[in-house]
Length: 638
Image (cartoon, rainbow, N blue to C red):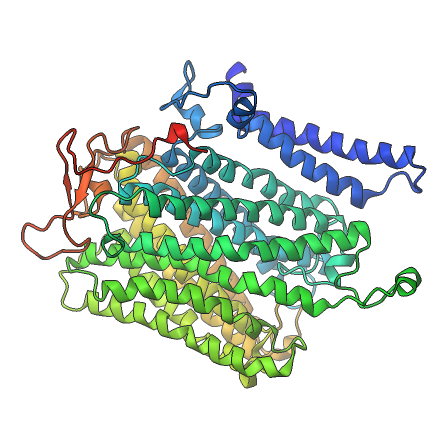
């Protein structure tokens, strides 16, 4: 019991409960003292309570402890390894500054959140399997559907952070992230944010869809407020993590690792971090403006003015303003989701094709190209929303332009596979599955980017099929490939290959069926975000197929979870380099030691010289070698 209450996670949860209660009580007390009527006003009380609760969690989990000690002038020695006097597993349930531990924390949390979001999807998919209302009323349906969307997006962001946190320092030869304490803070602040999103289900729900468009979001139940604040907090994590990645890559690379000798996944992480650092503020701004409109009656988005506002000469609000702010982040955010996954594809293909990555520099630059052009395409989400007509055509052309750098990656993958000595373990199967699924998403995208076709397709299930194909092909399949590929490195044990392939052969056809059926019912008139449909549309069979496919995908993921848990305990001990990879992390023992590189290395060749006899990417420098540029000590960093 003492060990249980010493866990940072437990202390954090207690801190969030206490902080939330104190915040609500303080606002209520102030309203009583000031003579406000009514004394109990849920919106300001819950808003302030939620924010104080987040602060309480961060204090309880210990994410700010060292910073507080610094302010008091106390020393904070940097401790490597598990907490003294506690089991090793406890470090994963509290604040730990190792990028490897934080990467695993991100990854496990990501899988948990994705499973929760998947369960919500199965609930409303079961409702939609037949026309008519079965067991979810429209408000309940919209709440479950909306929470599925925002939770799945949060799970994807956590998965992206997991891969970047664990892999980037290892790939560039850094001892850790540039700011280890900030890294731990960025992870743990996700937890209270996620709890706020989940709590929305039990506080009246919310029925706006994951986009939270006003005026619906300004009038939705109390649960809407918790979602807005939860997403705001999760977005802060994304910004801090992106800053950390960029500083780490640009200041802590190993000697000889010029920009065009970096692994391609590092390039993808840099492009992703540029987007996250510069655009995430916009979704935070749009959501906090909705909170301000609800709590302080600051009508940014509501065009109807009160008499008092008219007397003051206040301009009317504009709901389209929210969409501009929201989509200026949320379309580039798609590339935050998929660029790391596309980097995983480019990283693993040469390993299993035993060939160099075709067009390495072009692939590296294409990631930056996608990041840049991604800022110029947000308007295609608003072709039907009443946006300025003169913006439609430029947005249409810029949307189509983003296909060019994406096409560079596809041509590179095909050329890398061509005449390669291919092998097909589970990670390679998921890479090939990712390419096929992302191709479905890519080919179904241009009709959404041209004005004339989007006017008919927008808000139909065609968009749902396109978006899911893009997310599964760009993130989910590569994420699973990465889990299987680096599982031996993280744990020192091999997964069960038969179960891994069973996972693939269930999930891949299941997803093809789901995505194509979603597009088909969309073309027949099925609208998205509705709880019922007309049986006269002739889409009932399609809806049944989508639901069955969803359950097949869910079952396949449970097989993966079972495989990983059992293999962690009883899996075969992994060979030092089971994939014969040239990447630096595979040249050291598995699992990775506490100090990743006791002996520094120097980059001496290109990163993907597969097929060349005697090829080597790095050379470990002799102890005390003068050509090694030491990386910064984490103990001196934030």
